[in-house]
Length: 377
Image (cartoon, rainbow, N blue to C red):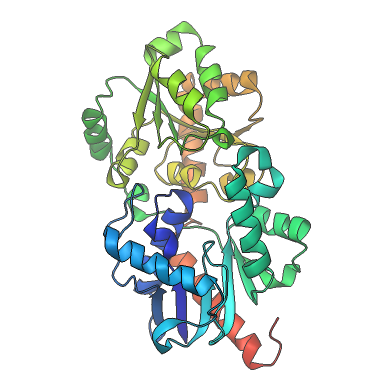
């Protein structure tokens, strides 16, 4: 079976989708067996992951985006005669190649439909174009959670039988993160006190302001014991929140972007991880914290209850008081934290990249099998 996967999100500054695609491709490459896997457009070997820039130098990145631009204008074939059995499109694609027997795509979330106020007009338009030109025309689809699958059925009216749920994986570095790595990360970032950790791109949907409000309302003794550490790039409409972080004073530490290699140790060292997002298609930082054995608080909305299972405390993300109470409860109870860690690690075992790759290969085989049996679409 010949699979070609569109890897263009690796050529931009990004976070969740880029992280997913990078690790997914690496896990597929490691388990390809007798299958042939290529990455479009001519990406080849995957270097280390860097969220802030392309995985390729400037000129190759520009050249490869030029190729994608030409194909998106209607050249519905893969260059250099690269016919394939299955072509898997990214969210940058606007046209599907004619020389693929089966076309597929991954659905991460439908937040531009469910929460359009949390996005720029450009993001909304791009997602709508991807839905109309790729998602509706693809033969089979992967949803990263059952929550995303249900949203796709309800919002886009895509038949459920075309959509299969395959959860993200979590890198082994989170499962294997040690206290020693946590100490190294703490020294590197000059974290001298125990800390509550938040990690995500800073944008309205991540709901950081509610966390800042809840932290401010903690008892003085807790704030004197535990810092609130925020790690993440500044994203869309983040100016006011970033400015608030900078002037929050004692107790709140804003680290900005933290390199991928530092994140397992930084996560492992947290006393509590808090992820009060308003909507997630999967919620990778949540799964990573659980894999690292960190007691976690997250939102009781969208995919987060599905991903957390019984491994996290669930709260109403719009309730400052509910979040404050949950943090207080965990910070004051070592036994509750220990119990939650056991459940979190058990739940996180579902999110191994090798399992994701195995399910993905089976998905591609079924999609191609349906084509061969004459039941395409």
